[in-house]
Length: 217
Image 1 (tube, rainbow, N blue to C red):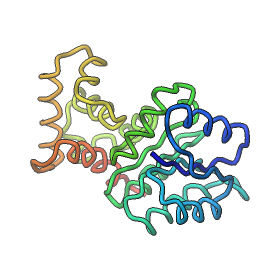
Image 2: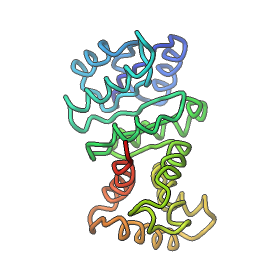
Image 3: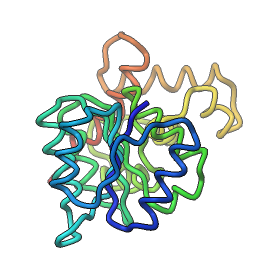
Image 4: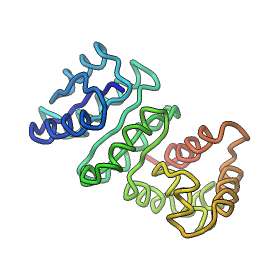
């Protein structure tokens, strides 16, 4: 699996290259600014791009804007965003095309190597990997708006864990309930969010996209 990495801090960038390589990934390019990122994506066409939100010269949102431009140039390009803080707008913007293959992790989570590596693999495979803190804030912001207002407290909790990318079995283990109970909750979520029967993986992605896309500006 080939990766293009964009991170301006040299020590962190080198550390990520070593970590990813140790887990069997091929880092095709590791760059420190947005123009080089777009050039590397065009040249290597990786399986996934791992991008810091803030890149030179202003260290504000160059990484995000480059990620959005990359998704416009190469629709469906898997992108995993790394950020120091929760930026709700960033998550909504990235997911606005509805194609999935997007992740948003806080940099603090990189220390949990297994979680980080699994997130990279999940996004490369077309899924979502949203940080738990991001999901919590997004759900809180949505409040009781429709259609999320139709979900029970437990269904919202299951949706939050689903958005993190957990399987039904993993959600059941986290909540100390049976797989059957989680299956019932996910089916209720799909129905209340108006997601028609289809491939289960696709519906899980769309369940996450449904409420993120509906966030107000």
